[in-house]
Length: 167
Image (tube, one colour):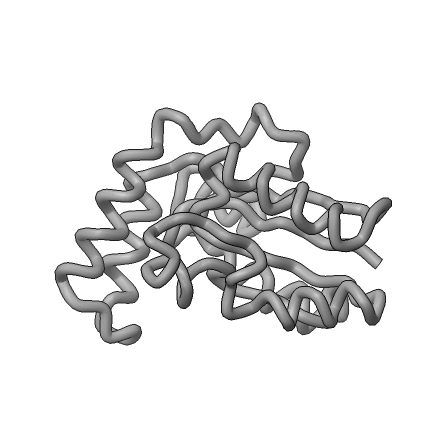
C-alpha cells in the first residue's frame, strides 16, 4: 500500500497521468484537487482533515489501497509537506512517493486555455489559474524534490519525448 502525491501546476497533466495509471491498475483510487471543494470555506487555508475528499483518503488508507492524490497547491513545498505529514499521521510507516511535473508555466497556461471551453471555465477562472502559476513559478523547483519528474503536457520535455518516440 502506498500514496503517490502528484505535484504540478493546473494544466500540467496530473489528472491525465493519474487516470492512465489507474486504468493500468497502478492505483485503485485517485483524488484530483484534494483541497478544491473546501478551500474557500476554510478561509483559503489548507486543512487536510476538512477536505471534501478526507473520508475517501481515510477509507483508502484503512483498506490498504494504492492511491494517488493531486492538488495544484502541492507546488508550494510547505503545502505538499503538510499533506504528506498528515497522511503519515493517519498511517504511520506508509510509503509515500512523489511524481512532480516539470515547471513549464507557459505550457501549463496554454493547456488551461485550450481546455477552458470543454471544461466550461469562465475567463475569470482561467485568469485565476494563470495568476496562480505566475505567482508560484519561481518557487516551484521539482528537481529539488525526491520525486519522479514527469513532463508537463505540451512542454519542452514532453515534446522531446513525443518526437523521439515517433522516430
